Length: 259
Image (cartoon, rainbow, N blue to C red):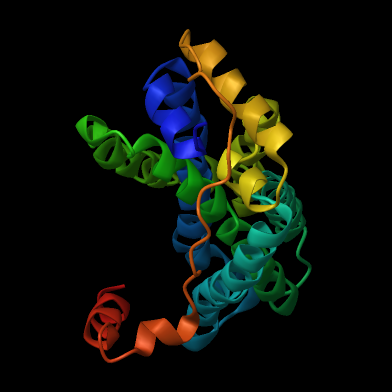
C-alpha cells in the first residue's frame, strides 16, 4: 500500500509541477492587478465624484475588508467542497464584479463592487496554498517559492504600465475592463488543474485521488508506486483556539502584527 504523500514523492518533480506553478503563480498577477488598481484609479474617481480624502481611502479599506471576510468563508467552503470548485468560483466572481465596477454609476456602487472584487480575489489563495504545498514538498526546489513572488511584482508593474497609457486616453473605466482580461483568460486553463488528491482522500473519494495521481505521473513520465492507495492515519485537525494556546500565542501575535 501507499499514501498520497508517498505517491507524490515516488512520482517526483516534473512537467506537471512546472505547469501547476505557472498557472497558479499567474493568479498572483491577476490578484496584484486587482489590488493595485485602486492606487492608479483613485486620483481619477476623486475628481469625477468630488471625493474627500477619507472617501478615497475607504475604497481601499473595503477591498481588503471583502478580502478578509470572504477568505474565511471561501476557506471553509474549500475544505467542504474542494479547492478546484472554490478556485473557479473565485475567478468567475472576481472577473464578474470587476467588469461591473467599470460601469459603476456612483461612488457608493464603486465601493460596494470593489469590496465584492476583494472577496473574489481572496479565493485565489485557496488554490495557491494547495499548489505551493505540492511544489515545495521538494526541498531542492525552494527557488520556486522565491520566484512565486515575481508574479505579484509583474502584476503590479503591468497595471501601472497600463494605467500610464489607458487613463490619459480612454479613461479609468476601460482600464478596469482591460485589467479583468488576465483573470478571464486564466479561467480557460482551469481544465488543466486537477482537484487536490489530498482533498479527495479526506472525503473518502479514493478513486478520484488515484486518478489525479495517475494523471500527474503520466504528465511527468513517471511510474506510480506499486500496491493499493490507502488513507493515512487520521490526525486531529487544528482548531482556531489552538492559535491562542499559551504555547503558540506569542508566535500567533507576532505573525499577525507582521502581516
